[in-house]
Image (cartoon, rainbow, N blue to C red; front, top):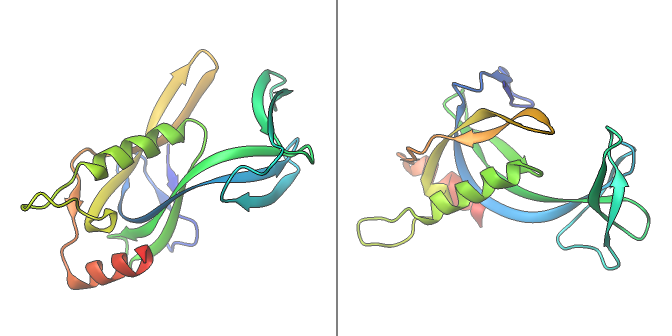
Length: 171
């Protein structure tokens, strides 16, 4: 399960090796797609009015529950992390989108970061942390796939430049 760092000079990262990521900002939103892989429609900060959960057929022909907009488009909940890839040349802005099973990864990362405190018991801001992002192989009765994972040993920023960069993206 390789990871792809789009627009990087060296875009393919072995999933077991991973890359260092400075998470700076998190948001939850909804991505609207045309049915049958028809393409991107819009990004929403909240669920559009009139959206209903309905049974539809997915790409494999299986019946699933999905959020469907009044226009008949599919709505997918997404948890997204914006930050910087570090240790691969100059810091590179990057967004980690987490929908489907990757929402579990996002929740685990949020929990880990919310449990990080300084010596005075103050919660550390997300951008204070350096997380090693990897991929993990998962399987169940519906199939097998790779998803995001992270190393439980979370590091900290080490320079004033890291501090300023993270704080600016978080603002």
